[in-house]
Amino acid sequence: MPALEFRAAWTFTSGYTPAGEGLLPAANVWPTPELDAHNRASAGRQLVVPIRVDQRWAVPATGLTELAVDVSYDDGVSWQPARVTPAHDGWRTVLTPPPGAGHVSVRTRTADAAGNTSEQTSIRAWELG
Image (tube, rainbow, N blue to C red; front, side):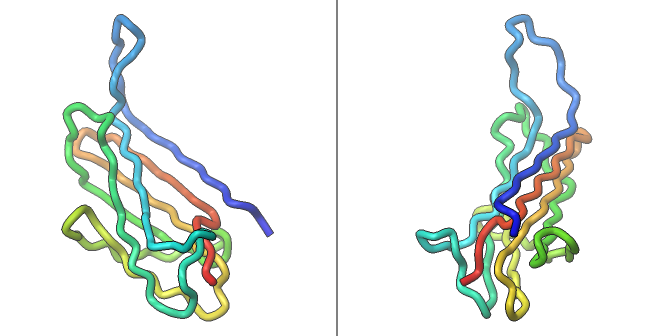
């Protein structure tokens, strides 16, 4: 049984800054379901997952042209697309885990108008219980 695993990759073009510091045009995606104190969501029912995209490092933010979410219930062996819809404070998806699923794994992809991309994968992001 694998433990929580997180992978991320960002692709962007960045310029030189004299101090060696600068803001990067990288987006972070945060699926934020309501979980209990043990990082568990209720099993056997639909799960509403708010999704926040954080582009605070991008100045100026160029606007997303793609936000995709995939979900896996077998530790990332197979993936299925999740429908993402706008919400009052970002986006959301509604997941319906199959009977017997023990964990949810999530993979997100973004792209913006400047051609910057991100992909983030969380294997066993949260437990179903």
